[in-house]
Amino acid sequence: PDLNYRNPAVVEAMKNVLRFWLGKGVDGFRIDAVPWLFEDEQLRDEPLSGWSQDDPLRPEYLNHIYTQDLPETVDMVYQWREVLDEYKKAKGGETRVLMTESWSALSVVQTYFNDSNGRLGSQMPFNFQLIMRLDQNSKASDYKTVIDSWLDAVPVGHAPNWVLGNHDKRRVASRMGGEHMADIMEMVELSMPGVSITYQGEELGMTDTDISWADTKDPSACQTNQNVYQQYTRDPARTPFQWDATANAGFTTASKPWLPVNSNYATINVDSEQKADKSHLKVFEELVKLRDDDDFHSSQFGTAVLGQSTFAIIRIANGRTYFTLVNLANAQDTVNVAELFTKFSTTKSFDTAVVRVASVSSKRTAKESVTLSSIQLDPYEGLLVQSGAKNCVAGLLLIF
Image (cartoon, rainbow, N blue to C red; front, top):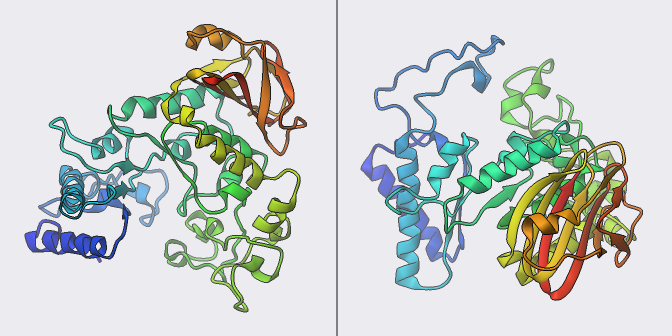
């Protein structure tokens, strides 16, 4: 339903909904489609955008100046945050979290954190910049621009967050050019400071599933026809999670799931990847373990572009040094990682490092030594290496 948030009774009723679920013990709320909470008070028609395709069903057909990102919407998010904070003050316990979904411009998303008077809003306005601004053709410089712009936008005192995919967009591996990019993108995301958000299947390297017109369920596609539905459907990224190689990928014992299972489920599934010597799941698990290190929570952080096509994230704390290296090109590249000590570190530099995590595509293994002044990465290879004493950290992410 489209609720009228200009009606005080509706506003209070929705606040009571929040209070009801808080009373049931929920830890917070994910608010979907936030930008469209309010419409223009005069209910004016939106102007045509001048979009090249004459298709009124497409959002691009109109310029949404009267139904999207109105100032009242941000204020409502602040009011909801007040409900959560008041509940914590009255009942105690952990802070309840408010997460908001908005595909709006960065300048708009930024306002959901807080206003100039310190009034608080969403702790986690989803950061969709990695989805909106990066694709399989993006260069290392693009990664740096996108990541730095988000970090610059996050107000002081708030935690950044990172989203690689969700139920509205193509899966990461498919969107970024292939399964070989699954590890690379996870290495990028999980080397970042702040909160990482994983859509089911990303940790396995799951890919989009080809859905026929007959099997299509997404209302956005069903209201079209079989000639154009694939332009609108989001079903390919919504297929069942792949647990094992049994019928329906172990997702259900029903004769037929809601959406078809991807045909690659026999090899891309939790059971197979847990048993394999190397797998996307094991790469993901090792990265998550590393994020538990306190140095990832408190380290100095920076980005750089190295070599022909290398994006670098460097983290420094207590003398230990982490370098995450990923090759974005279908060609080898050799980089001098050691030069980043001069740029970012105030501690001594090191000549060698030890591999902590290697992508499925890498020929290297854990505990293998590398020379920091000259590291050659194969096409689409990803590495996370460590140097320095146990009490010394610098973290670096490289993407070719």
